[in-house]
Image (cartoon, rainbow, N blue to C red):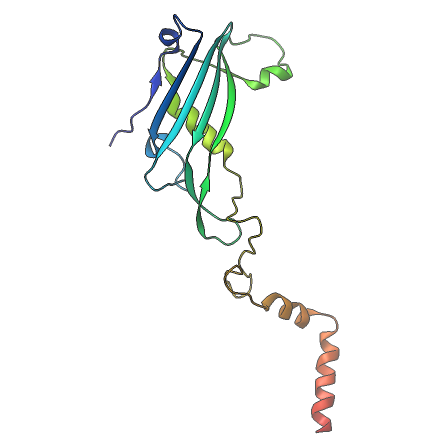
Length: 184
């Protein structure tokens, strides 16, 4: 099945206007995100605000969607809200043989203003907005490295017991236990 791309011809759209607004629903599959990204088959709601600039375009994008990801601590899947906004400056001019300045780092080069790929823009924004280590909850306890249980669901003492066993005082406890056994 071919994934449909949403392409804008900015040159044509902005011929008579300096500002356009578009509300788009993109199928999640059409974004071609990495395999660890999924959702429940819902479309991604996108609002684009495009302003024509002397050297290109200023694009503000609002995304409203959620994705199913795996928590980095407890490894349980959860839905993460991806609603957010950002603005990007697209320049039609590519600087030649000049030194980059700090303001140039906030500008993206627009290769073809007649084939502006909205899917690719939304894809990049979703990837940028997704944390490297997503958490189901800020206070997620994770999984026990000893017994493997989810500490959010089952409280265990494995780590405390291991600390006691590996403590320098564990031998003293062992000696005390021997002494108490010999007294009986």
